[in-house]
Amino acid sequence: MDVIVAGAGPVGLMLAAELRAGGASVLVVEREPVPGQPHKAGAMGARALTAPTVTALGERGLLPAVKAAALAWFDPADPEPPPFAGHFAGIPVRPELVDPAVGADSPGGGVIAQQDVESILAERATGLGADIRRGVAVTAFRDDGEAVTVSTTDGEVRARWLAGCDGGRSLVRKHGGFDFPGLDPEFTGLQAVVDIDEPGQLATDWAGNEFGSYIVGGWQQGGPPRLHIIEYGAQADRDAPVTPDEVQRSLRRVSGTAVVITNVHMATDTVPAAFSSCSRRSSPRQRIQATRSPAGRTDSDGGPQLNRPAFSSRTLRPEGSRKVSPPPRCTAKPPPERHTGSWA
Image 1 (spheres, rainbow, N blue to C red):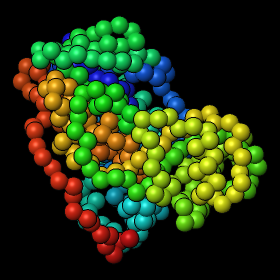
Image 2 (spheres, helix red, strand yellow; image 1 turned 120 degrees about the vertical axis):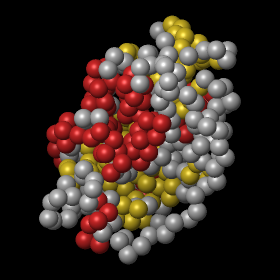
Image 3 (cartoon, rainbow, N blue to C red; image 1 turned 90 degrees about the vertical axis):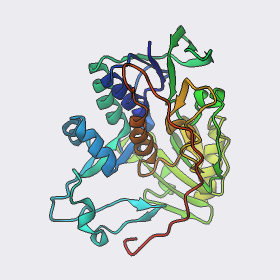
């Protein structure tokens, strides 16, 4: 086996397909037994696709499937600007002020549920010959310099390389000795599917106070409420699961209500922070690599969790005959502060 990919999210699946296209044998292991967690589906799982990502998908013949599954799509040839053109640090971009020349050569962009992206990428990866095993979690690994022996809940597997695409609580990152420099987060995001007493007291459009902002929806259609919270200054434990009490306390702070959450079906948090993109990809163990997804739990609003790592995963490719080359060592400084222009 050439490469074991830990994680069957968009990043791991994109990487698996790229490796197979380059001639490497690939095994993808995913701890979730079935795809389609609630926070990845529908509007709650909506992720925007940036122009570089759309271009990459088009080059691989995936654009028709992506457009068909998209919740919304913008074509640069359309005479009318889109109603929403994205945001910069939460500040909405005014579509009418965007220079049309910026996207003139772009195939467009849109919003799609992460679950649908994963389905499209999984079909491509398996079509190219990748082996995807769900319900199999990585528990440990050993790198002897010649290959990596990976222990999973389904036994041991040996491969020439291990690629960590297993999310913000990445076991590969933690045990691989990856450097993790950067700047502390300034807010914490939280997404949850919950049961709430009297959800009508909460806002169904973005609202908030000095502690943060939130939006609640879904219960009007008969399903459990879906909750998205952004809390300023909150410092979540990156390694601890989100608790029901944490969800309730956070919602009470940003809503200014005494809302009662009676049940949490699922909850996940994101901790946006700035990290050195080079240092977080190179492990002292030369046969263990990580794409950008395990570096930290970034804000999901707008799709950076999907676009940045999925696009960067294409750089971990085989070179020559069935050999995966590690990325070069480098030292990177945090990028300089950038400011919005007249388009915001």
